[in-house]
Image 1 (tube, one colour):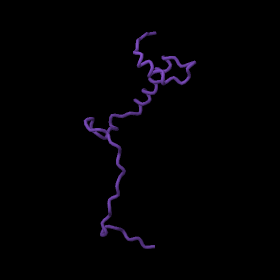
Image 2 (cartoon, rainbow, N blue to C red):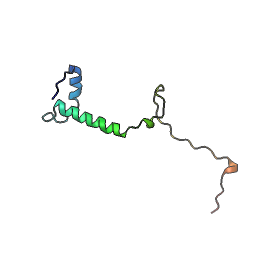
Image 3 (tube, rainbow, N blue to C red):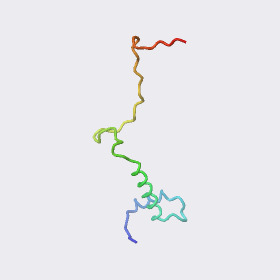
Image 4 (cartoon, rainbow, N blue to C red):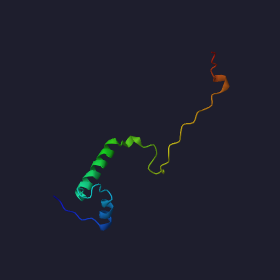
Length: 78
């Protein structure tokens, strides 16, 4: 087992992820966070990006319908 030091600030942030104060040790919380990151990495693909890293991200715009010219419109007879 390895021992490492973290700042008081990081430790306070880590404590926010404690679900059960009687059973959750810092190690349990770190393991849970590692599992979350592993699952997220397995779902992420570098081909999912729609913008260049230099551009700020922006919400997707809903597709807009293009008007059909009257000459190309189909006539429906009932």
